[in-house]
Length: 263
Image (cartoon, rainbow, N blue to C red; front, side, top):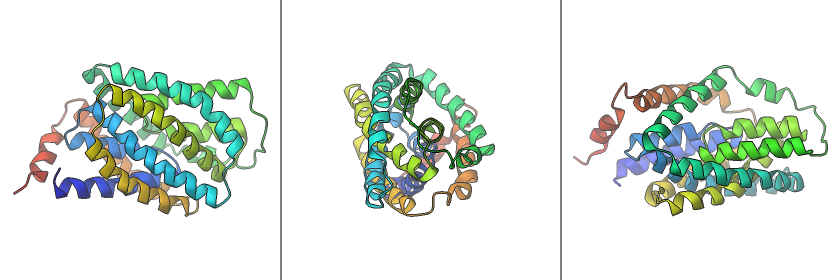
């Protein structure tokens, strides 16, 4: 790993940590960067979990210090999400590399639709909902969200926010706090599956994590709505570039590798 790769990973990690902590979808960037730097899609998926886990250590700590963490419901909602994440990670670890690349491309296009249609508008519009007891339907929803998060981290924040606001009745600030707690708790379980299947690149993951942690620290201290629209078009451009590569329309990997080769 050369200095150019280190710089790319850290800078992208800052942006990813910022986006993930405020809303979700930042893993679109980190997965894209890891793939464009030469990692197979399944290993990029496992490697990304290192940065995600450490990013959420910072996020949980910061939200807790600011006394906006609803610990009880956060921990309860984490239980079905952890169970689901084990299933999702197992599916991702066993899936054929070619099929997984296509799956990432399709999911990226779906996430671009979410970004273009601004799902945060209906999420933000539910702030007035009061807290209500959790029911079995909510647990089932979070089990399936956990499966998705275990399979591919990308965009799980949107589903978690919607589930927490609509299913648990919290405003977006506390929903963000619960979101980072849930992701923090299920990530080690998902990582274990990828580790067992030798699908983690520790050098890339830990380097990316430096940026993710910095981005999470910045985002957790800012107003919840800031930053989302600012990065929207950056994400869309990255989705288009990476999806094109996933479907074999262009060979961006060789271009990136040419740029980062030592002179």
